[in-house]
Length: 262
Image 1 (cartoon, one colour):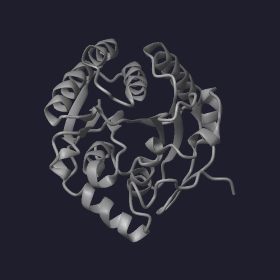
Image 2 (tube, rainbow, N blue to C red):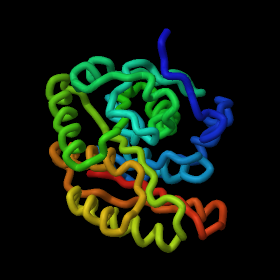
Image 3 (cartoon, one colour):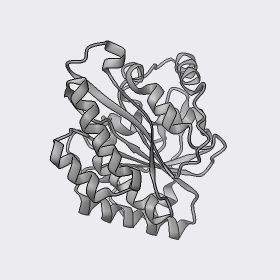
Image 4 (cartoon, rainbow, N blue to C red):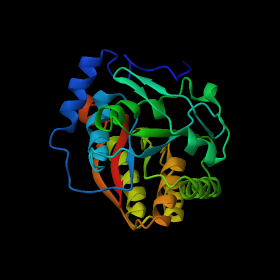
């Protein structure tokens, strides 16, 4: 059977199923903020650095959710925006793709572009562990401009209307990269503040103003625009951390945020 095999298991997260399951179980302890999110921002670094923050984001979606996750991840290698239509392997088992939704989405399918990209893969074990009956629509976002995010959100909304699916959104993104901890916190929290009212143009403006190296700003924008069209009104910052919290090296950090859109 065709599937998208694991590419970063054993590096970004454990490849051994029981070890991975125990780690995810520890992440989800005390992570129930009582929010029913339409969409989330979740980081995609190694679990030792950002796993607890990712779990904080996923814990805002009820664990009995059995609909479709639209997972948007940035293309770190410059590939075009494209979907995947095959199941995704995780150490905990396959995550099925909602192929009817992929067809309705009307964007290119390119499995090769997804093969070595980690931004979506890192989200899949969280989904398999916490939402075992859910399906996914993996979308690699190449063009991250505001106009492209608006167009992609429009296609997503049309596909929801055509399929009638119950959907939740995952925007996979880390925040500032390889800057001093104080700079990362200042720039990232300033940008995230604009998402409080889902003001996507202001989010872009603040990124440009500060030069914050947020790798998944296009996925965040697409998710925010789509959620706002479906009735969401605000983005709530649940947790912000940096790699320095783990390494204690505050000179060169990467920022991570858990955000719930409601």
